[in-house]
Amino acid sequence: MTTPAAFTGALRRLPGHLLPALMIGLCAFAVFGPLGNLLLWAFAEKWFFPARYPTEYGFDFWHRVFRPRAGAWDSLFASVWIALSTVLLSMVLAVPAGYALARLALPLRSVIMLLFLLPQAFPSLPIFVNIARMFYGMGLNGTYFGVVLVHSLPGLVYAVWIATAAFAAVDRSMEEAARNLGAGPLWTFRDITLPQAFPGLVAASIFVFLDSIDEFTGTFFVGTPDISTLPILMFNASMGGNYQIAAITALILLIPSVGFMLVIERFLKADVLSRIGR
Image (cartoon, rainbow, N blue to C red; front, side):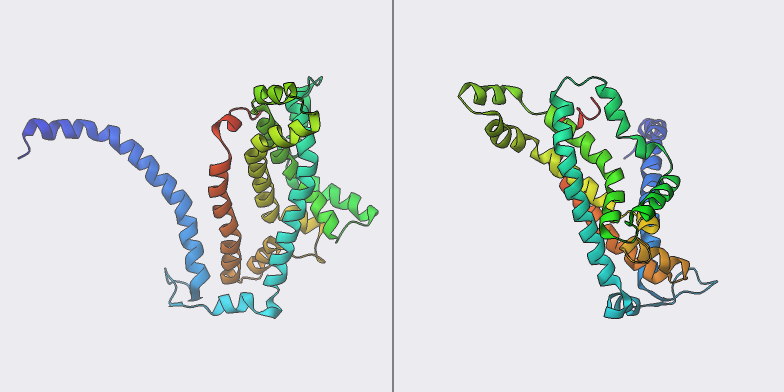
């Protein structure tokens, strides 16, 4: 039986528990509220004002999205191909850059690291508009190579910063032991340094892939109308009032984001995270 004193003590503790519960509830609503609305639109067959919820559900719009003439498969393959190419180009540049920034006593190292953040410091719209004008004069507009280049601009931010942290977290005593045993620089890098930095490099590749596959502005100004990706397809569907098709496309884009984030949690260790930006 609850005594009056215990009941009074519970009331006193309630404000301390209420605020964290309220904050968790607000965060959950901010995350899952839009996702719930997205799911409703993805399976809604009929939803007209003033109905609060769809009056009919079904998979008719899913069949429309994935039929051959809809272009969703072509947009999906183009998105994946561009994202993989962006990862390859970004990591080819980021691995030597990250190693140099982590190991060499470079002058103005902090300034160099800051320069890689500049693409994120300004609004993307004027940057991509000017890049599109330059690419038009170079004949790169409407080409896959031009889209990959413009996707690599923000991708290098993640790639270089995480690669630098990954190489900075490598245990140098193991490298020194290998060199003392007669290993050359290339052998030491291949068999000692690179395996230790590999989880961080995988995480960097995933961040670049996700950024590229969700990129809209750069693709819109450099690639359209010759190249259509899933974000372009979603934009066209939204502007045309086809909210079901836009919601389905958004769910397709959400799948790799959620899946790869679980992979990042496994590969991006605390020692690498602690060295980002140092």
